Length: 193
Image 1 (cartoon, rainbow, N blue to C red):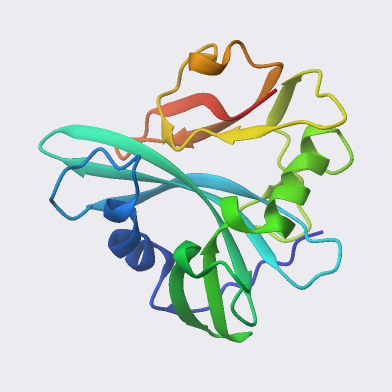
Image 2: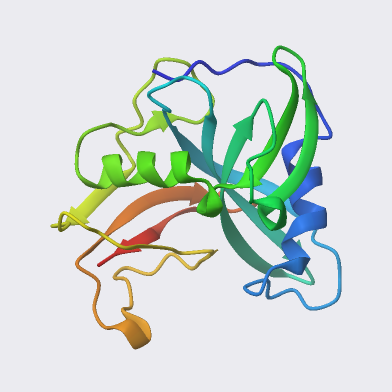
């Protein structure tokens, strides 16, 4: 089970995301910098205990518009070889020291943990409490043995996921988040085929 250390990170996650998000192809905020607020998320465990895994939801609020982004993060004690474009940056963690923080979509440990969750082999963990299962993160549908996962990067709170150009998904991972005004929203955060 995940151990969550309530300590400092310098720079913090939202600071790293503020610099990184506008460079992503799915950023919808144009040329302006994000104004991010934490919206929620969950954790999964690395069976080897080496990589921290967090699925973070952050809402950008500007001019009355609210857009929530989903970024899986991996926290490593060294850079992930070959994943330089996925590096958000480094941060000094109050317990673990320097951590390299990557976009988890490019980290095989993160994607293996998500695959294990989709297949029912592991449970989601609470984002902020150690040794606490987060039963609000659910998986619907039947995954095949060689499931292909598409992360939903811009969260909309849709009741049913859209298959888009690739057709209808076989299922999806659903989670909840809070908007800055306290409104609770649920929707797909990952689709699988």
